[in-house]
Image 1 (cartoon, rainbow, N blue to C red):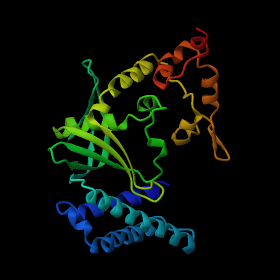
Image 2: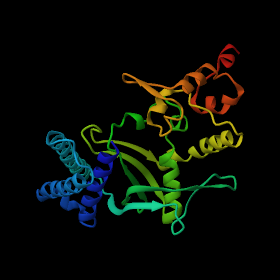
Image 3: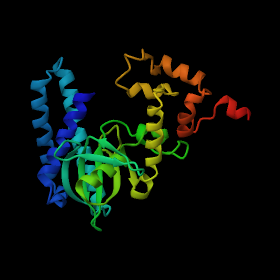
Image 4: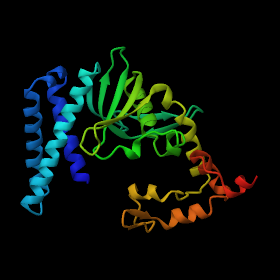
Length: 278
């Protein structure tokens, strides 16, 4: 849930803050005790803010947080031992306000204003930067696949947009963006985007803006998208066991051959019945 995710991000940030500038010290035995101290401090603060329904629930959730803290440490240790030479440089970098405006260059004379925050920026041996974004759930939603269209049809644009905005804000080259999943559920997975891999995203962003400029705000054709959307109550999205039920997504699937879905079909690699017959 949101509280668990925020708490874990707090733990990860605190641990990185204590070791920034001396990160190889995380290989020492005392680093394990340190990350557990940080986790227990955060757990105690959150217990005051969000009282648990009972001691059994509290202990179960507290132990899960402690395991996630250890998973974070072990993930960073494993990368270091495997030869990763990125130096932790900046933490919790926010952009998009008046002091630090963020923008995504659309390449046609327009820019898109961006507001966001990333968990960590590393300095790589060649001087370029690597952006790290921690995720506390499973990696399946963010995984890349040859079976998916580029950037999952516009669903996975954050790496490209954030990297470009940060490059403008920091004035330095962003060579890589990584989602890291330092929890048991995330299995310490890394989903990475290289610099050249992110460049084609600009055309997808243009296409999405063209769709919005047309005045047609279309529902997704895949009801699974609705499971992570904050607008579920508006669209009457419900659950049937483990499945998400989205009436508007069902309607979109039934009407995918309409001309208004032309851009969405192109982005998601979906052919309409009319195109199939042709």
